[in-house]
Image: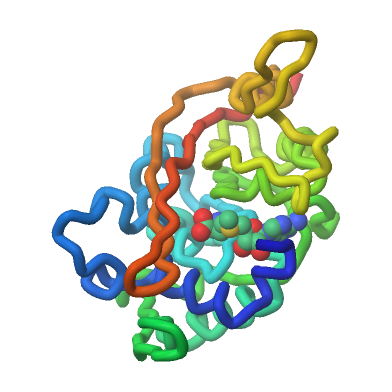
Amino acid sequence: MSSGFYETDQAVSEYLLFHYGSPEEILPYPFGPSDALDFPVRCVRDCLDLKRIPPQARALDLGCAVGRASFELARFCTEVIGIDCSHRFIEAAKVLQRHGSLAFQYVDEGSLMKSAAALVPLEIERDRVSFEQGDAQNLRPDIGRFDVLLAANLIDRLGDPRQCLIRFSGLVRAGGQLILTSPYTWLKEFTPADNWLGGFDRDGQSVRTFDMLKQSLEPAFQFVSRNDLPFLIREHARKYQWGVGEASVWIRSNDL
Ligand SMILES: C[S@@+](CC[C@H](N)C(=O)[O-])C[C@H]1O[C@@H](n2cnc3c(N)ncnc32)[C@H](O)[C@@H]1O
């Protein structure tokens, strides 16, 4: 997979199914890992601390892909911005925001396709959500501050993840929540090896991504919790990517 993958028909189709597909469409096998379904929904439902959400809360979903977690955040936040660098993903997310549905096709076998419709749950107020194409490493300067920042499976797709993490302190309000998930799949085609946050040896010691996250985020953020969040991306009727993201939750400290 190259960094251009997120602009392909295949990626749009796989991610629409990943974010909006029904269990029957994604995993029609009773023996499959059904606890890995609904990943974007669980990123919000299992990680967000509702007690910390103020009235009129603002949320940012960085690397939002086709937007399902952004819509889920809108259940609890009155303004949600979803940002992704993929033009194709943002185009699809904007159609879903405007119309609440998007017809698409996904691979069954070879060039045989099936038809489906991505649907935003009706009870979600879609006018709370907007989508923009943008670079998480170079956000527009007037984007403001947020009560919730979600970056789901983004950091190991960035060229300079540490720089991005450091910028997060200026994006989250004091007391606001940062939710990170990642399977820590470090690949040179996305991140030069010198910029990997973990997954290598230094001076005979294994460097682990979580420890480097902690080092980069503290003291601007306080660590709250970490959990395993499985996910399942269907490639075709008989092939899947099953992964386990590590979700970590952090609270923005008061400015000193
Ligand atoms: C592994 S996908 C995860 C998507 C989504 N958050 C999810 O959990 O399904 C990584 C996403 O990050 C986006 N992305 C990669 N680099 C980015 C950057 N520099 N700025 C914004 N988005 C980026 C990709 O286009 C893709 O949608």
